[in-house]
Amino acid sequence: MGYSIDLEETRFGFPSLKTLLAKASPERSGDRLAGLAADGPVERLAAQLRLADLPLSELAQDVLEVDGDDVTALILEGWDRDAFAPVSHLTVGGFRDWLLAPETDADVLAALTPGLTPEMVAAVSKIMRAQDLIAVARKVRVITRFRSTIGLPGRISTRNQPNHPTDDSRGIALSALDGLLMGAGDAVIGVNPATDTLEDYIRICEVLEAIRTQLDIPTQHCCLGHVTTAISAIEARAPVDLVFQSVAGSTKANDGFGVTLSMLDEAHEAIRALGRAPVGANLMYFETGQGAALSADAHHGMDQQTMEARAYAVARRYSPLLVNTVVGFIGPEYLADGKQIIRAGLEDHFCGKLLGLPMGVDICYTNHSFADQEDMDLLLTALAAAGVSFVITVPGADDIMLNYQSLSFHDAQFIRETLGHPPAPEFEAWMEARGIGTPDADLPSLEAALGALRLPAA
Image 1 (tube, rainbow, N blue to C red):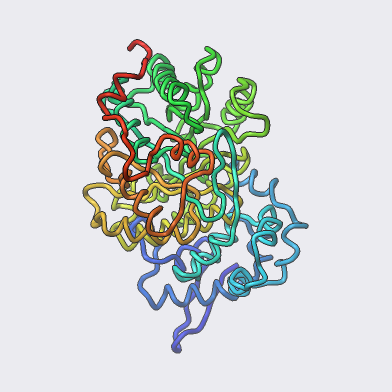
Image 2 (cartoon, helix red, strand yellow):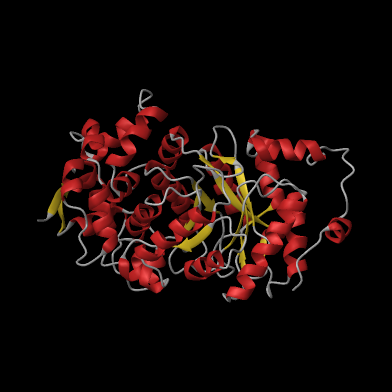
């Protein structure tokens, strides 16, 4: 079945739903690289107009099938038809209007979430302006808990990311303390390991646990190694708080990460059985990013933003504590410049929250992109207005291990002071008790603070 529309005495035809969704996407280099992008703004407008007239029920009936794909099966199995009923009569354009209506509040959106598929939220995002994406995402409430409570209205949390090129224990601790003294880390203190050996994974967890317990910080930590390494560490009774994994929107793309749904099921059961968290806590942490599937030649002819939304179906299966898109990390081949990164970040946040996820964003870019820190300032401010759950912060905005640019601890402080968005309440109380964030506080130097920590032997 094809889709067509007449515009300015020209007929535009789109042979499939995949094509229509791809052509309706705002300009981005990844779709052009894949040969899926609209030929220009007129064809894009035609596709968006045709998409706006498409019934939502047609998207529900015509989920983008991929033979033998467990993500497609997961989407179909998880779709709640009763929850979908209140919007089943709408077109994609009508759904946009419905989402923006004042009476569509947080409770209404929470009830709708199980009735939405990734294709529905991807479709409606393609016909929304930036302010639409911000206004709707701001209304969505997704609250998760471990030792701190993330996603409460009017607050913004941070991941303290103390990466180190050689996973040196003191280097990790020094960077973590730098962030803590700036009030960063209420979402998680999370390290991307330079290696993925079980020995290093366990040592990093022990370093982070030492920092957390000796400073009595109401947060959680994570070594962002592979899920199979996490399972082995849990079996060794290591102090693992959260299990992390990068995920994508198709089986083939997840194969590229070396992960399956059964592995994630096993990890979820293992971390719950470890018993470190309060009853009912959220225990998983997922990362996604536009372009991941295309880079693995696993996009099955879909545009990168629709594939990104499908990754969220994988994440929500496990009721995670945290999900974030690494929006500019994969490179300019997929998001060429600051404008594309800003748009993609707003889309990802909107789609993730509408699907019920505690959505954060790594506001970032690689050094060969046509982007800079001012683009990141604009995206940070827009996402804070949209109610983003958390952002990632690193020393000086420069990750010296992963070699990309993100946000600094100071950037998070800027948004908290400027917009009045404090951290999680438990962490805020911890900061106040120690004078962190108080102008006249007599805080220890980093050297003194590091010297007072008792770190596990390397």
